[in-house]
Length: 463
Ligand SMILES: Cc1ncc(COP(=O)(O)O)c(C=O)c1O
Image (cartoon, rainbow, N blue to C red; front, top):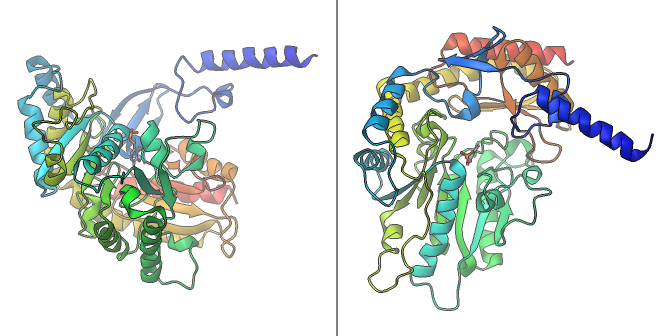
């Protein structure tokens, strides 16, 4: 058989595979692998559980993609959306509506910040806004002539989104390989990662060392070229990396010293995920710019927000420069229905004390997970609130990451047993070895027990 015929056969096989699996091109999915195993359809969801067409029930141990914070099937959110849709279904985002005003006021109040909120539809866009605001702010806020702050510093392993700027800030090689060179001016530094740092360092000295790397990088690159440093309070999709307590305060000091804006990407950590309403609260350090997404509307509508301090917003005010305003728009920005949904979602988070539940159940989850440490492949378990990562290694002494296939077997085993977990796939080459759980913030001990026992059984199975 000629290579051409073989390749034709392979192509038709692949076509058949994709028609078996339906017409959707899924993200992060090798569709060839669906040839004999078409994905099952999910038909409805309630609370923490998904119902498949074939009758099977799944505990969604990752809240969609850590976004369904208040759980599925909330009638009151559907009602809020329906009422808003009937009153004002859409508005050009250059115009003002009551729901948008109420939401933006609420967000500023929640982080106790004077400033402005730019609403968009995804975490990637919120970060894109943050980057553009940082560039333009510096250009318009009296930097000495000849200096241009255009560089953005971010961290390896972090994820900030799939649009060009946010992807360039992302520090995960596998999300970028093959997609061009990215935007220029992005510099990456390592995050605190105690498990893989020199064991001679205490958490404190490691945290301070990582903040020092930020300072050194700013100095080496030239402070007058650095616009912003963007970071997640806790690296989430990159493997649940929690910084030592000294890190964020030291980062804030460094940013202040060199006039670098600090952007906190709270797309995952915001709205209760880590046991506080926002991730920054663990360290009491406020950024210059916040970005929110996911839990802001619990996935009931696409919504994201970029909050900037008043002083930053003021740099965009001018009577004589007709290019001084923020020249950025997205059709669905400040969508009234998404805003109504977010307001109701936040009301639920507050009224049902779901942030407190996240903290309490998160502590319970860490206690229950402790026994997993006895498993020969469990290197480290990290968690805060209702997000936890179990880092799997093939050898506890060398800490060599467990192979991607074996980690995949654990995820598959959990799924077969009715629990959906995920891992940090396609992030850092050879390090897809962190199994992640982040159940809805309504989860109770029964759900946590189901997650932990299923994970345990699936880990034992791969020995
Ligand atoms: C920390 C973080 N920032 C930004 C994003 C991008 O958000 P979206 O997928 O809504 O564009 C994500 C998505 O997972 C994320 O985890």
